[in-house]
Length: 204
Image (cartoon, rainbow, N blue to C red):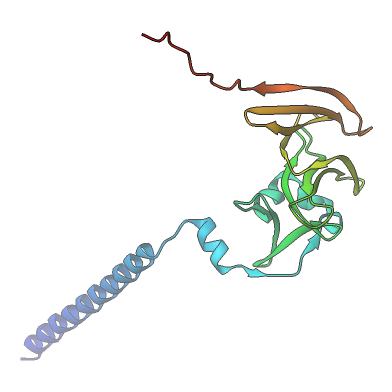
């Protein structure tokens, strides 16, 4: 009799334990499925969760922030090419002399210089300037200033930049500038698209 009771009790315990394990696995699967269904691209999630902080002057940021491992995580560029500094879940607009900076690019190889555009008059209807920051020395030098018809810029090696200027429909002019002296060392027509002239046909 006692043996029969033991067998029945053992069977019941085994069934209860099996049921509990099944419930735990089921709950874990449901939870994992919910988490996966709510996944979003990392950049969208970060952008949604970040709070907006006070602007920060680029010259005030520590030099190590601009080293490759840190800048990939803590410096972001939005669709308008405006730069922001990310720290402790807070996004801070990067500025120079109180003006928002755009088109931030680091020099090739060493990455010891950073170039960026800013609007010295605080608007996008007059002049635009290109400034170069020496990261180790924490100094900034303006190397170019012209009207907002300026269309972009890029590094040409480690000591020169090329700034592109919109000179009309289908026309782009280039200025090659030494970032140490701020002097234009070369300038040329990047391209010019000739207007399409309709061919004349002889009258019948």
